Image (cartoon, rainbow, N blue to C red; front, side):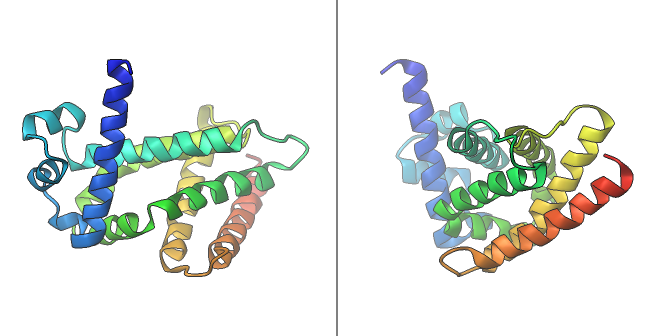
Length: 193
């Protein structure tokens, strides 16, 4: 296996360990030293992969983005943009379910450390840009920036529902997403975006 592939696999393994540890003890209680010890590497090696804990979250976000993009494929332009976006975002929530316990712990820690939530916003907006692109929705210019901002708001609102949604089919999450996308679509139409 080439060195780059090995490093990528090792980085993914470290993300998995961090998520398991976050689920067990809380993200706010997880130190980089703890992660290095659990992964049986030293801090210098961990630093080769991540600059800080927020870098772990960025890497996780990129991983989720990539999984969505791989799974969703090319947009079906016979569907309207709202339905395409619904499918993309539900794919994202399906993938989030794979990491549910760790993610819920991480999201809960943001209440105690709002700085972490603020630091994550640019990365979240980039993720939402990719989700719009995956749905075949234009993201360039002022209109695109407004769409990215709008989808980020929708996502954050639906994420609160997802955290509490214990239905096997994510029915509550789907309903919240459908409702919020409908509102967003009305605003897009009202303002000619």
